[in-house]
Structure formats: C-alpha cells, structure tokens
Length: 445
Ligand SMILES: C[S@@+](CC[C@H](N)C(=O)[O-])C[C@H]1O[C@@H](n2cnc3c(N)ncnc32)[C@H](O)[C@@H]1O
Image (cartoon, rainbow, N blue to C red):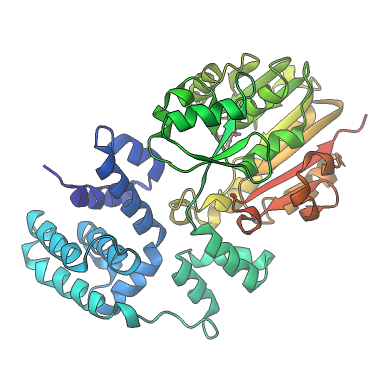
C-alpha cells in the first residue's frame, strides 16, 4: 500500500517521463484518495514542479552525482524532500528526512539510503545559508534559478520587457493562482450564487474588474459542488473573461469561435447574447469537441454548436458568413505559468516558431469568414510580443483588416494599458490575473 509521499514521488516521476499535464494527471491518479491526502499530495506535487530548477540548484551543491544523472525515483524523492525542507514548515525536517530514507529502502535502493540521508541532512543544516547565483554578476541565471523559469523563457521576455519588469513577472508567475469563477447569467445571479456557495461551505470575494466574476476561497473538488453541476457558474480567469466582452456579440448574430475547446469563451459569448443567435464552436480534437458539448449542456447554452474542424483548412461554407469571429489561438501558454507550472518545462523555444506559423494560418482563414464590416478578435494566454504584438501587426498588414477601438469594452482600471486603441496586453503583475493578450480588428465594409 502506497502512502501519500510515495504517491507524490511516483506522480513526479510520471509527470517528468510523460511530460504530462499536472492538472489532468492529478485528477486521474487521485480519484478516490481522501481529501486530506489529496490536498497534501497536490500541494507538494505543484510546489516541487514549480521550483524544480531552484531545488536542483540546491541539491547539486551538496550531491556528488548531479540531479540529472540520478535514478528518476531518487531524483524526484530528493526534489520533493528539499522542497519541504526549504519552502514549507508544515512537516518537521526530521520526519521529512526519515520518510525519505524509509522510501529509498522500500523501493529497493538500499545502497542509496545513506546518500539520501546525507544530502538531506546537510541541506537541512545549511538551509539558512544557502547561496544562489548573484543578481548583478549573472542576472539571467539568477532569475532562472530563483524563480525556476528556464533561461530561454527569460531571454524571450527580456527581448520585450526590462529586467525589472521581467523579475516582477517571474515573481507573479510563482504566486498561488486564485480561483476565479464566472456566474452563468443565463440562469442565475451573482447574489444567488454567493448564497448557494456559502451553503455549500465556500466563501467568495468580488471580482477585481468584472461584474460577473467572483473569487472562491477554496479550490479543492469544487467541480463536484451541486451548484457547479447545475451550471450556475464555471471556472474562468478574469483576464479570459475580458475576451468575450471585447468580441461584444449582439443577440441574434452569427459568431464563429475557431479554437473553442473546452468552451469557456463560447459559453460566455452565449450568455452575453442572452442565448439568441448562433455560435459555431469548433476545435481540431474530437475529445475536446465533446467537452464543449458537455459544458454547453451544463451551462444551458443552446446556441452553442460544437463542431469538429481544423481551423487551418478553409471551410468554403463559412466564407463571409459571420458577424464576428473569435480566434483564441493555440499559443505557448507562457502567461499562465502560475496556474500550470509544468508548461515552463514542457515547452521549448522551437515550439514558438511552429505556433506562430499555425496562428497566421488560422488568422488568415478567420479573416475570410467575416462578413463585410465583421469583427475579428485575436487572443492568447501568453505575454511574448512574437505571438501577440507582432501577430496583431501581421493581421493588419497582411490580411488588410482595420484596427477596431476596444476602449468601451474594457474596464476603466485597465484602459491605460490599451495600445493604439485596439489591443491590450494584460500582465500577471497588473491585477493578479493570468497573462493575456486581446486585439480587435474590423473587415472593411
Ligand atoms: C487556447 S485553447 C482555447 C480555449 C477556449 N477558447 C476556451 O476559452 O475555453 C486553444 C484551442 O485550440 C485548439 N486548436 C489547436 N489547433 C487547432 C486547429 N488547427 N484548429 C482548430 N482548433 C485548434 C486546441 O485544441 C485548443 O483547444
């Protein structure tokens, strides 16, 4: 029988080997585990993943074998134990070390138990005087190690932002992500949801800038709550909620959401349209189209039509037939590192070039599908200019679309960040949200 610690190490081994998505892997593997253990396992897995580079830097100072040459089980066992020793004070150091030694033996690495014991005891003794790369002498390595973000990502950001801005972004990316929900105005009100959630044992806080947003003070197992199952609310970051407002759909219009799974923005569009009109919500993967269908059913959004479609291929029957097209493009996802810490290790610099190529193909089709005078909104959950600002320029110059002024659709507190009237880069440092980019264009009439 595995205890929680053994389960953590096995999960970390699996995540590194398969490059899996932590959210999905935890959901699958922790089914049936009691909620106290689930909370502990989730916290340590997320923390160990998030601080991997910093933990490796510390371990490498005290181990003769470098972290990358260790056996996967020992590597993850040391990482998760050092995370507990230097970042948490919940479990006494002696218990962390003893448990690690016991697990080493239990898994048959008896000859390594002295090594594990020695490394952990030394780190524990010296944890108040650990040294890290110097900020002035090695600024890039400093940021990468302290915030555990690979150097190529930092270099990418340094092309677009000052060192101080990048440091603030790195810090924000490691903060705990708040759980934002969007009220389903098709069937309820914020006041009703607040009352129901309170009865379900969850306190809430008002959204930062949107009327339909609330923050939950609890995050575990929330999708099991009856109010969630009844479609009264859905989980969505406030920055992502801004996108549907910028699309600004009107009841009765025909809308295309080109990359729409699992349907977060389509469902928001349906609510803003009071469920009148038509939304074609397409995605390239059948299992994801099924998720859109399930979510639309739960949220009672009957005008959402889930459709299997590769957006890079031209669909003749869509040409010049939509009032508005949303292209919430596949992207590097580097704006949501605090929610998905694994993205930082799973993406590579090479991915960025491939993604930009797909983004351009999708935008080109999106422009064809607009009626004269129709609106295109392009959005991503990243903060690099190559996927955002540069794409916005390309859409204008190569596709011949005009800028559409978005000021009236953006909350007052964010208006100062709008550029040239038609685009907004939200950084995680601005309002404690994810990083997001939104740009709007109009087809000439
Ligand atoms: C950023 S996510 C969309 C999130 C969604 N708009 C929401 O609010 O829930 C990007 C989506 O694009 C889809 N995608 C990737 N390549 C695509 C393509 N060639 N055609 C259509 N969808 C694609 C992915 O499967 C993914 O679901």
